[in-house]
Length: 294
Image (cartoon, rainbow, N blue to C red; front, top):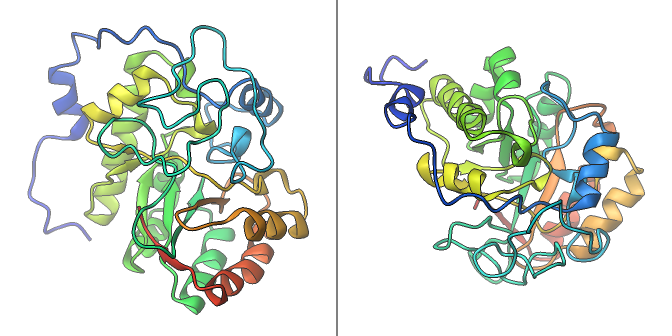
């Protein structure tokens, strides 16, 4: 599949050349979704295995349902450069810090543009069903994939890419990187990018932190590996299986121009997600929205 790619040093090998000196000036702790994210991560069994949710643990449902939550212990990094209102955990309207290194919460590609992101796959049961729906409605999405899942199901990775969807790095193990030492952060990102590039011939350019848990160390490593941090602005918490009606209503009620919608095709039973997408995709198209990638 990738015979046309010229041999070169791997991403991890290149990073290792500068790996003896750890990043400095990174003492500020996590820019995370707050205590709610921690509680959800704990309740959902966050671990070093492919877990549920690409970040739904503390997501913001278009500013509607997640609510403000306390920041993680330490001095939170908020305000300018993060896309967050200080102390609120809610993305600032229009925040898309293309030049400040913070996570991107919105797309800015026209007055009717929105983005659909699909996390935690690939999964042999749910990913093909999501792909079929996207094909049916002519929608291009961003799939934030786990490295270990990609390694298990390489054919699915290649299929997602071949159908024109964007692949994003979502770590190797769905780790909470805000609690991970810098060498571990570096490996989680580099190993996943290497795998996705090897399977598709395309190097990922976006990274989504599991649980939306950002820290200065994570953002610095994104810059180091030339990955744009990608967040979301509409979270129906489909990972928790709250019911098809809840997922559908949250998306339709809180989506607005520029929204980045969070959904999942891995990490558990995603039958409710698929059922909800059958409803919301044609409805959003009927409302005049166009789907783009970040």
